[in-house]
Length: 71
Image (cartoon, rainbow, N blue to C red; front, side):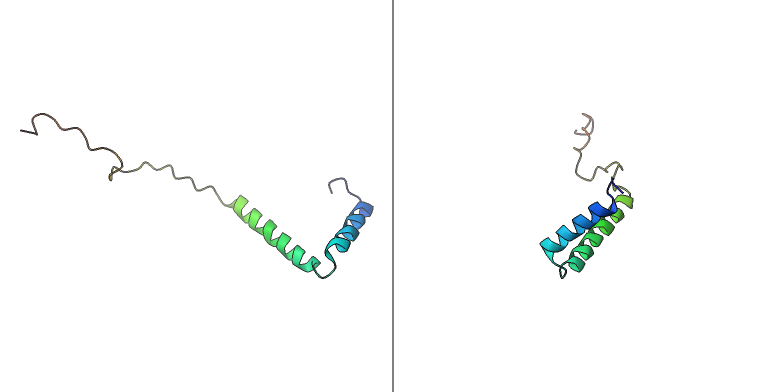
C-alpha cells in the first residue's frame, strides 16, 4: 500500500492522534468517508454535455427577405 509498512502506518497514526486527539478522529473519518463517497459518485456519473443543435427561437437572425415579398 503505497510502499508503507506497518511501522510507518503506526507512526502516522500516533502523530494524527497527538495532533487531533482521540475525540476528533471519528469526525475526521466520517468527513473523509463522505468526501470519498461523493468523489466516487461524481466520477461514475456520465458527463452532461448537451450537443443538440439549438432551434431558431430568437437566437439566430431572421432569414433575409426577397425583393418580391417587400412590394
